[in-house]
Image (cartoon, rainbow over all chains, first blue to last red; front, top):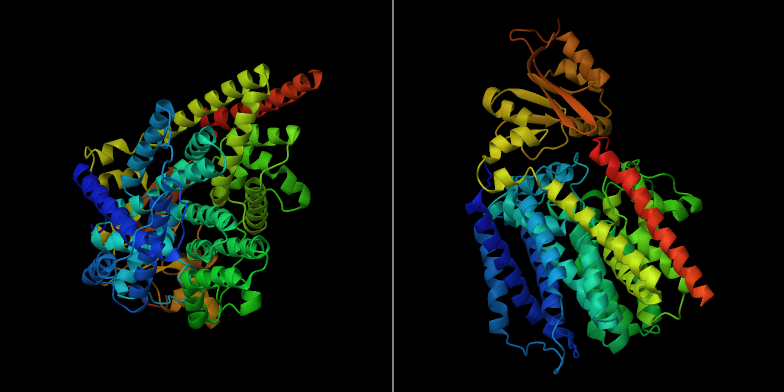
Length: 602
Length: 35
């Protein structure tokens, strides 16, 4: 099957590819960084900023290829070759760190803990993909764009015009290898964000603070879980954090280049997910205040943000008339379709709910989409309130942004994984609290050490438990197809379709929103797309299913009444059934076939 | 001195409370297969 594979060889090839991508990004990003005209970098910062700039450039380059219909392997190769050659063609002095700096300290136990977490999440990322949203659109749409040869507007698909920066990496990954490489293209943001948190804390606090911030970020269960899937939550967190980190540097140096960097990373966040717009909304006034309303600084920031992130919104506006299609349809018009951002997660949006929110999201995880934030932040950060001291300016800026971005996300959608964007900031806060508790007195030192140790052990155990099923497939003891039949809800149904449904037969998929594993050479109509089309055209689903009956209909649990009516009308017969349990739910899947020779009107 | 001890007691109780709640509301139900 295309794009699917696992085992030691594929793992090694994928790892080699992602290392090459990182090296190329660093190489090209270092060249880009030289234009910012910054000096006084601390150790490690040029490499981090270069990698971030380079990855942003790769995403932009693939975006241009996709929009211009150049999605062949050769086009990608030309893009990468250009990125490799440019720094040699137009040579510039590379950015250097300040002389005479201390090495970056990292105690061995913390290093081992982080390496273990990275390694376990790497195993999860290399296993065939089972993430719901990845199969529904993060990977499905890049696959569709590759099949079509261009990033086309698919008018009945909800996500077709969303900002897809990270998905550009996935598209390259699918073009060159498959889901294992796509997984690594998101995983790479896990160590990168940890490095950003570490270096920021090192610059504005101290070495102890840097180590603990990185540990608290990496050991957050929701972050670990996302690192194993080709999603975009950690890449969003990375670019959001980078934009604030460079804003702090812009405040220190007052250089236009630093404000432009803030804009570039803010634009990269905007191009990663709609939530990146919240970053723009918060950073714009902050840039104005911090730069003391100097027009050159504000313009540098705004221009960079719009140039880097604006393309996705322009594409959406030109193709659908709505820059954030299909959101805010009341304002821009839905082009036949509109959805609400809020998907039912959370426990209310009142001011009181906001105050209770940290407690609820930590301890009532099912109400927030099931992702676990862990108890470290709730246990540590509130203790800062009991002994308030005059904060540093960097702490004030970080706190204002964290509070603002949390409130922004809280008002939009309360899925726990969306709040991964604030976890790097929370990690800095938790490290501050932990270090202060250690110096407060013997009792608080003993209790805080005990609590942190217990929670870190618990979180580590959760990491091991989460990846227990991935080892057989990544080590090659079980084939990817066999593993997916056992571990992925949609795969069994699509496998039946691939093996038993004729290429000419029509099939209505009313069971799955995970379309990635659907065979391309079968005539499959996905129910949400058909439903949207009929809504837009003013047609009746019930009439459609009677007038143009499908040869097969695949349902899960209770079908739509119109589908139930069609099944009864044509006396469809079940040809394949299977149950799949995803705790706490069990999905009862049935694929029906219309009896041959059945007339259209019986 | 007294104030410092009071602070330490408050933050310690808070941390232990959060950890206990986390264990009882998140970890134990996970272990029992209820989540």
